[in-house]
Image (cartoon, rainbow, N blue to C red; front, side, top):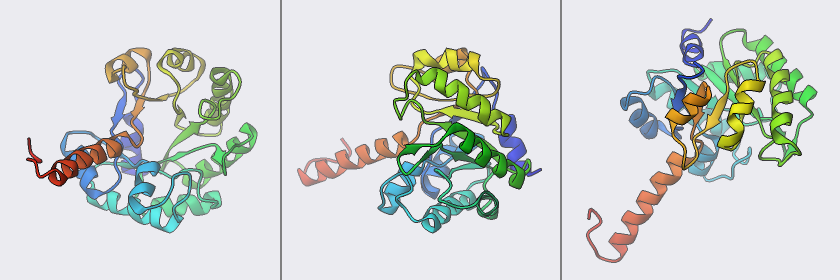
Length: 243
């Protein structure tokens, strides 16, 4: 078992969640690590934007892996990599690539080319990833029923999540699930749940709901861009950019 994967897996504690202000490059990774966070997570939307490509596998896989490798190399804590839908790689090759760059875990979503995968098909894919990785990767299985606006998205997420846990996922991530849906998801799923921290809620509130992991996606990157936009605007106006 990878020591970093073991450390990352142990940080998924329902009620005492792993908080992950997602990063996109070495500088952002160092800032988050120096703030005292025990693990790091990349955000594909932020990484692809930083590279000049759209999200949802719009960036070449080689560039995404290279960017993730730089983050891993610059960190001293475990790093979980947002591997999107796997870039069309076979499970064994995907695992090989992730382990080669030093990833301790990965996000794997169940949307392919804009279409939600059949849950049984995605479960088979996740089972193959688990078989290839053994215990060396923490698999965070993303569930996209809320993004896809599936009818009864909570029930659909629970049904998918159960299959994904059976396939070997360590954590299930019903991305963009609203806060009022989280307690039902925690109750209905048999393992650790990853939730988003939306404006108006806090990590403490999500902890009380029983989540084990909290993600911020591209929001830290977008906030950084907002700061740069404000700074540049003040310079353009010939005003004090430090005010």
